[in-house]
Amino acid sequence: MTEDKIYASNLPGDEPFCFDDEVAAVFPDMLRRSIPGYAASLEAIGSLAARYVKPGTSCYDLGCSLGAATLAMRQAIRVPDCRIFAMDNAPAMVERCQTIIAQDDAAHASRTPVDVKLVDICDVTISNASMVVMNYTLQFLGPDTRNTMVRRICDGLLPGGLFVLSEKVIDDDPHMEELLVDLHREHKRRNDYSELEISRKRAALDNVLIPETVAVHRERLTSAGFAHSAVWLRYFNFVSIIAIK
Image 1 (cartoon, one colour):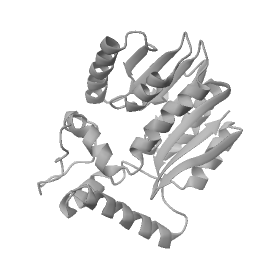
Image 2: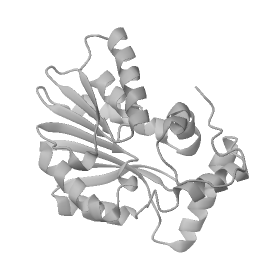
Image 3: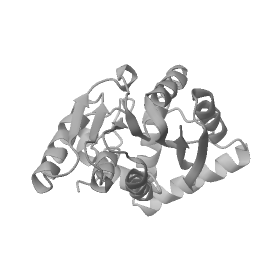
């Protein structure tokens, strides 16, 4: 695993965060050190796939990056005639994801087939789906597009289908929000990010990653047509929500 040192140097002219070749090369380490509870979210995606994916249906990993959620679903699916669609709009991520999936194909030829596609997920038609995952992806879409995206996911799910939504959030209580942000900074310090790296990455993500409250997410899910939703995991200001159509 290549170590994330992208923001270790105090270089001038910092650009907004983007999922380019440099990020793709260190992305597993970046996630491991930056997102508390990330490994638990992948484990749960596997458990949920084993429970909710139905024979003859499709699964979607929207904003798949390097395909970690795709692999979690793939390893857990035990029913026939399914297909996973892993989709992302970042060429560097898709290229590496295709390599990772090809390696998994070679090792486990009998597993559920995966199509990795370079595409804007806002243009994807979702159909015949028993499970859809957006693992820390919706937060990078413009707030004005999020309602439409979630509604299209719900429309494309079969009755009883599952949507897994993981996001960075903000708290309704400003005092608690300040505490949660500080706890997250401490988490990154414990994972050997310097103060310079923490501050530079936060600046790069400003106006790129736009978080919302849990209440906004759950209201959006209800308005989109989901019958049930719940936060199953929260670690500081990171949550994973499951919603059932």
